[in-house]
Length: 60
Image 1 (cartoon, rainbow, N blue to C red):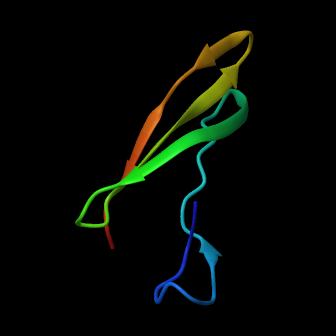
Image 2: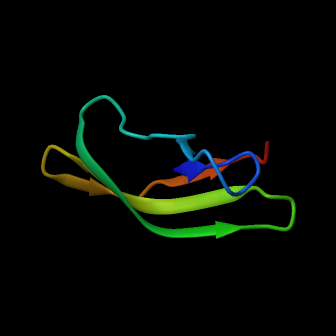
């Protein structure tokens, strides 16, 4: 997840998600609410299993 305090610059990594044991992760969808909370849904590969986590990031 990338973000900026003022929406312009500088953009920095604000969240990175790869749990222990996972070999790859990717996001498929992102949504936010009026308060600025962000939800990301994606997929993790752990061994031969695929897991679909939903990650909620609270507004700053």
